[in-house]
Length: 234
Image 1 (cartoon, rainbow, N blue to C red):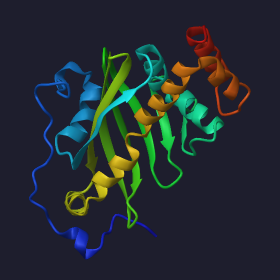
Image 2 (image 1 turned 90 degrees about the vertical axis):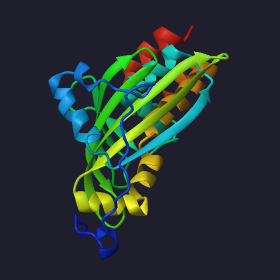
Image 3 (image 1 turned 90 degrees about the horizontal axis):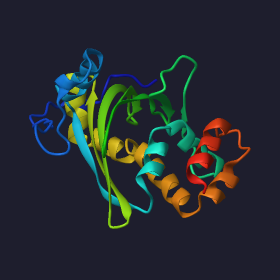
Image 4 (image 1 turned 180 degrees about the vertical axis):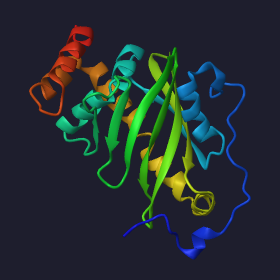
């Protein structure tokens, strides 16, 4: 049975510098500008982050309204990918969940609750918490990720940075030495951005084809699909 106990190799303490939240530039966050509840969430990550990874700037052949529609409704976006046989992970809402929150299960050991904390022009901030399967053990962790996007040169350019905090000081330091946390984030944390980018690019190329391709699928909310049609199928 997996637990928070780790192998001796992972118990080695590390003195490596922690990632630091910048005070200027596109990734800077003024924590005091958030609600007291959201400040608690962000401080849980930024006060002592275990790791930070970046998604390099990527060109997406789409438009901002399409991208933000899909990034803002991740349950719908993941449903489109499942309906097309292009994804196995699940993103959904349960009754009573706020509209800015979804639940995520990658089906291989990662379960998260993800909340969109802030939408700003060209920059969105998310927070998530849940369990991570690192192979040798399962841990609880929290992440804050900042998504940047802008239109230029006839396309949308997007990039992101993710900060993660793994619970337990000794565990956190050992995992960082082995690169387990960084590797996991690099493979999994950007799935939301990649999903929105993928569907947005296909929708921009042929929105009617995407609509017809997933219409009637049990994976896709029909009301959201009709809203997609109203806004983008012209």
